[in-house]
Image 1 (cartoon, helix red, strand yellow):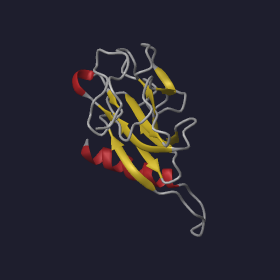
Image 2 (cartoon, rainbow, N blue to C red):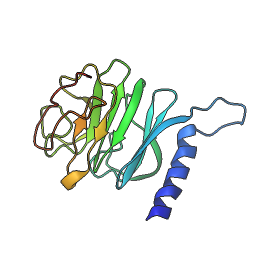
Image 3 (cartoon, rainbow, N blue to C red):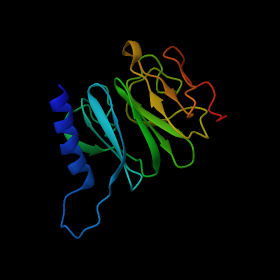
Image 4 (spheres, helix red, strand yellow):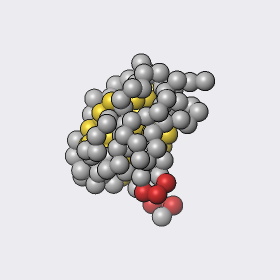
Length: 165
């Protein structure tokens, strides 16, 4: 399993950087987050690319098709941080808001619904986030909007506090 993960990671990073002539400027991955069956890369352009399983829309491209190469997350152009979990992914945007996509059976995306989302949706009430964590505990996910880890539990439908200390 570890060999497969690193093989996919290497292939996705090459794909995320883009193909083209050696002299063409290519975005670089500034952060990578790896979950059980999917992963994401934050690129220097502020875009996010994900690869792997996608049965819950965790790649954020609007489909539910698995991808062995990195696909662009729809609509994200100003991401500053990313996090991946069991079947969900989140990104902190430059203005401090958070958008998440993927599994939402327990309200883990923080949009006050239980609708699984294959495209990014804003997390309600988060306006000053600096980091995001997506939890894989007990087969559910939770997003937080602060570096201190406060946020939604697997049973809540919206984040607790997003105010950094």
